[in-house]
Image (cartoon, rainbow, N blue to C red; front, side, top):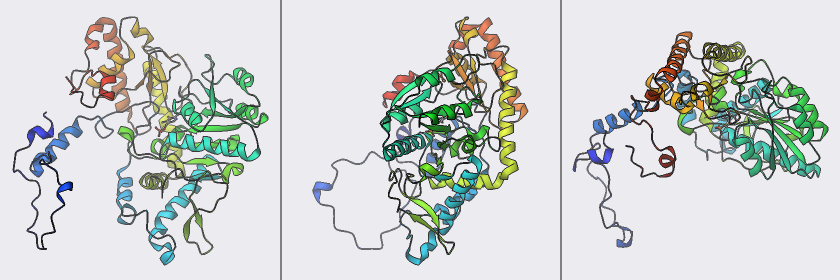
Length: 482
Ligand SMILES: *Cc1c(COP(=O)(O)O)cnc(C)c1O
């Protein structure tokens, strides 16, 4: 398909402007006028529509097919949430609507959603206060690390280092570093897939500000030693940060607050709906226990004595602004609607089905693909293409081949501690028939890897782009696909 500029026909129009019925404005001063015509496409409305619909069909999406992208929780989002997000009173919300004038009447609904969502998140996680401001998971981590820094500064603690397990998401060390800490990796125990407690004890010292723990971790394993980790950290006046991006696995089963976690973030866009393909949008609310609440970013939603809501900025110990206005309000609203729609029982069932689906897939594949950490998994699991590499077929080849079967590939080459890794997360919304079809495709690819490895090197054959130079595609915007 040609780019839209090539389809342009001089004089063709999608919109006809009415005759001007006001006096002609004075012309722009010559200095501000362009010397050449703007290079705009000239097309009919129908041509434009077909162009963009055709482009959208080149993308894989949850609405078009299975999307087991590990760690990303690409689950189906009930369309009822989109209806909620489009309600006029919410969609038309303006950041500068008056907070105080007219009793803040025009924003009461939005503030009530945020206030109630904060309390629902406290209930779900066992934390004592939440900020909804962070705009993504990584932004939540940064906020959390800023809270850790503020806490230690306030206590007069000279703390410089954050400990992070080697399987962690790359955003963890980045967030700690941006907040001013140095970081140190703690190894994962090969037998259990959990953080090595001996190594943790040895690394922990007066300099330790915090440990960042992802649970379930990126291997999809629940850390049963979490109470011990908390004990070790607290003995050194270090805080425990819980990366709860993947809360989807534990709703109603485990509350980080009950385990003594000090600060955590939740990815609303992975756990409580929101279509978040292509890098956004998201929200990464941060929950804290009592001793960190004073440092939370501003603004915070309060409920006044007359039961109306307001944004309050008066927190002298706050770390300040980390996002403007209401955060990513559309994402907050969808999360609120999702929680209300499913209710307590529904959320528990969602987590149980996410875990069941992942274990079902894992058992359907582990005899043909290597499973380096062979334990019951949570919402995801990590295979290795080690056996297939012996035939010259890599995780990348398998991922590419899957696209010819109409599936989005799993996350590949992450976590880094598994060679040729393929991280599969089916999510709770997929049927047994879809999971079976994926298992059949993966098994067929494994068989082809042994019988005809060459054929897999050229896959995919059915997509408009097959094997671009990924580095060039990311760095060079003018790069034309072959
Ligand atoms: C997705 C994820 C993040 C980052 O979240 P973003 O919203 O993509 O910034 C952090 N940690 C874990 C474990 C994740 O899965």
